[in-house]
Image 1 (spheres, rainbow, N blue to C red):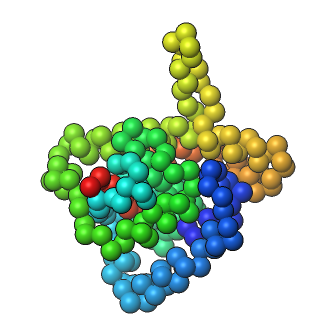
Image 2: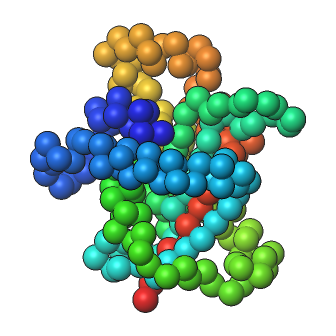
Length: 210
């Protein structure tokens, strides 16, 4: 995921000014390497879908919701030595709208909460169907929005427009990106790729307000 992010800085969209330190993922890389050296087998044994949560520092995570790591494409049943081709690290609110627009900001937010005590609402920890379905719907909404979004016009009508992933792909195709052309051949359009059946939920964090 870090390697993918390192080669995707042209996709960053943020109002904050960025310094050279913002473009380095080395801090995350070193912390990850140290942790894996200590507990590699433990992490390798963890199943997909494992989750936790924390009460957010308001200035860092301004909205309640979910931080999720999705793997693409989904792992086939009984597959051995499977490797994901790409990852989506997202922070969305309960409606499925992105809170942060780039993965580096999400990593920064997680890093600033790594010493926080685990907190997950009881309904989710107990597997209450409505709570789980609500989270699932938010993730589905985000996936759908990557291909197309709906915009309500002044007259009340709804207009379909291209989602973020569709726009990114179009802009890169216009610039003649060979990598994007190959991805389009392998993965299809954004509407074909961003289908919930094509992604695995690797891990997720419930973000609650204090």
